[in-house]
Length: 229
Image (cartoon, rainbow, N blue to C red; front, side, top):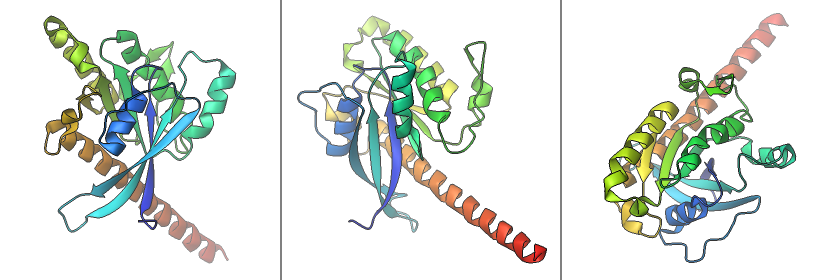
């Protein structure tokens, strides 16, 4: 197991939305009994079978980095938090379905993290507005997870689901809505489990593509060096 390749996935969102509970559920398949505030960053690991059932199947470690804090933090806190954003392979954006502000704050969260990525993302913000078209060029796979689905009144669920559908379109990402106190929302074979597996496959595929591009660039550089000599 120690020889397995690893990929890094950030878990971002406002304090109190349930990021730690989501990570625990994803990695341990258990409900987190006594959630507490995350100070700095907490890392847990999930084992994932890439393209399971195909000739390309390979097992990976998925490192889930649960980053604490809020988007309204002081610049010094954001500067400290930036160290967690290096060499990111994927991002899970978590919001509380009963708290519209936590959904809106996913935009600055994503911008904060992706602006620290090692490669250009193509994201721009003009006059404080979010540019959806530019974000579509982002190469880092994203997944939206909405928590506390069980706490939404029946007569408001359509409105909430409509709002999350717009979020999904903005981020060019699939969405999963769940109750962190109920593992059945991620039961094997469920639509949520399929989306989750598809997201992790995207993360690993993007890593493979970047590695191939890096190898091609190195060969091109070496070829030019030989001819220049």
